[in-house]
Image (tube, rainbow, N blue to C red):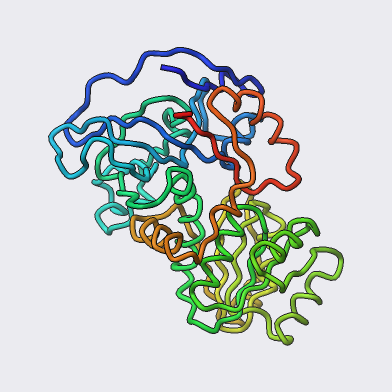
Length: 339
């Protein structure tokens, strides 16, 4: 089968490799349809991912058609599915508590093991969710949107809460969309005027703050001087995450949607004075995937607007390296593997 393989940082090539072997019980063989390109994929290509062994087949935002299953008749051959790429052990404490998204031995397709920028993959049936009437392209956006949906659910913010989403990239936009779906009054904060303009023009987020020397003053002004009930940081930047503590209202909640290797420091007196809740959000669960699919069907999530760039399995060899640097107008790029 054909596969796009990142042989080493900066070298992506299309190769022929053996198709996956025999199925184990409870697993399915899938014909990959579409794959979204994530910030993680750009980091892998650029050699910036801290826990990755090369060569690696990237791709964890996946829609696919079932080819066959081993001992499971719940999914008929030809069915379109959304793939949950987080392979959990099912045995650790997190898994036993119903939180496989933070499994102690988690393996993510395209990161810890080969992903879906290839023609066929094997995945546990439990990680496959029927896509129903979604298009294959739309189904490939579900995973990245589920990250934001999970973060919003983790916040437990009531309808009517004032929410600040820091970072207007794909994950931040997804978080903002699901914050709005939850009934929150959403403001975006980003260092890019272009991103804020795009969020306003195409997604209706008219309340935006351009990061700069007076960010704190502008955040307080936008929140009536109180700070925000909910603050979501989706920047993947340690400095931003530390500054976010100052944007939270008394009694409010700060959710870290992204993760960094840095140490995050904060003032304990300020933290306690506000009786602030600090929440980590990792990956997503089936509940979030299902919420995303329902929201796409209802029209609350405009996937056609989120998808700004398209390519093929052959074209991604040149396009992904270019998009890693040319980000103007880019929200989500989709690879048509089955084209």
